[in-house]
Length: 206
Image 1 (cartoon, helix red, strand yellow):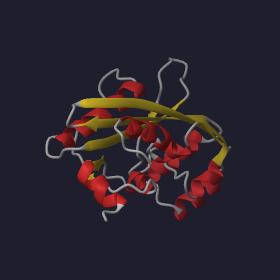
Image 2 (cartoon, helix red, strand yellow):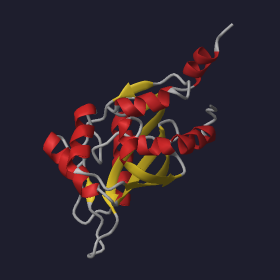
Image 3 (cartoon, helix red, strand yellow):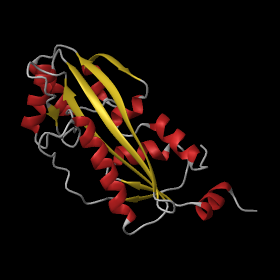
Image 4 (cartoon, helix red, strand yellow):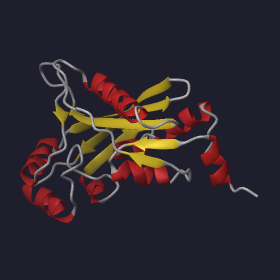
């Protein structure tokens, strides 16, 4: 008798188009077998590109890049963090800090402010060429942070590869005054509630 995972694997191939260990860990919780392929694309923001358009475009491009060599249902996601619009009406995007100094400066700038997270999600069916797209919003209000609090946090958690310089699933939660959104997993990088709905449309049920 074939078990569920064998039947699933014969019926459809599920692929996560990502190099993120955080997205992989979230998808793993759904209990579905999947492969991981890291797409190589240019993730630079285009001139005058809005945060919404940026995460939609990059999610699509990641899925399409993996589709060049693999077939099945391809999941791709991209995330940016922004401060609330400033006086000029433009959203300032927070990137992955890359260095300890940049992480400190990002968190110092976030102190006492709202940071908005936009997470793009794409699900591509390579057999039908149909792609489902969604953008999930999540807002974090930071406490007023002292320099010593920021340095203490950064000494305990590696956030150099995290947009906004924190991990909400770890000690980063101690930096927040409040959080608002429908899916806390979107803050980590993969909107799971919406992904489950997308998979159901492809007759893959969690």
